[in-house]
Length: 304
Ligand SMILES: Nc1ncnc2c1ncn2[C@@H]1O[C@H](COP(=O)(O)OP(=O)(O)OP(=O)(O)O)[C@@H](O)[C@H]1O
Image (tube, rainbow, N blue to C red; front, top):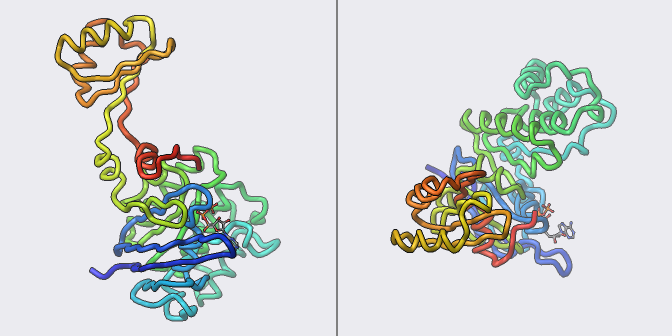
């Protein structure tokens, strides 16, 4: 199968800032691919190069088998780029926005209406774009990016600033768009978003991709212990250690006076012990997450 995107050695510098510093990237056709990194990691610049909006200083890219730079008129109808909500035309309603975008691609009003319904905005068709909520504006931006039925959709931080419910609703929409067979490339600085949505994630920091893998593989390869936490008080850390040692269970035990934390690679006997000691109050079990992956790859805590 041909790759939807193949890029090698991309570099882009703005003055003193090396925004993109040697990025290699391959996105498979039909994939939901995430570029994850903190602010300033170089995600947007990388996307802009792939979208044909910026010329890289170095490196080469093929998008749907074509070179995106110089701006390629054979490529533009095949890709959708989600604009920032601030890029809407002034004083047009939601429907007028999407009809206008559609007309740029020779798409009729019926398709524009269908897309409004598709993103759940049929009831807001007559609302001025600047009066839409944050989540609605993002949906309209996605509808505009899809109006010409592109094969490949680029989304730059589509859920930034949305409340949790609006984010979840948007995730459902993005999953559906991908399930229709479209390749989706998304940048995000939300670890949970990358973990939930993406088939594969490229972890990016300081202009470089540190690792690319399915989220579950990134987490599994860490081989991090499971953390079990319960309320302090029922079982002291010393007693927990003694009992765990006695049963040959390897674990690190800590108690900060509020929470007893037991980190172990064999959670089953630890759970059994906590149950035996009637010390399960407030139990939480937490495996490694992409946050731990980022910490391991960069040596720093993740700060979006
Ligand atoms: N047009 C520009 N001129 C100068 N510097 C820029 C420009 N665009 C981005 N930068 C700088 O390049 C670096 C990478 O920016 P970029 O926007 O690509 O990162 P990002 O990962 O998308 O971050 P964010 O999540 O904040 O958008 C940052 O240090 C940024 O300040």
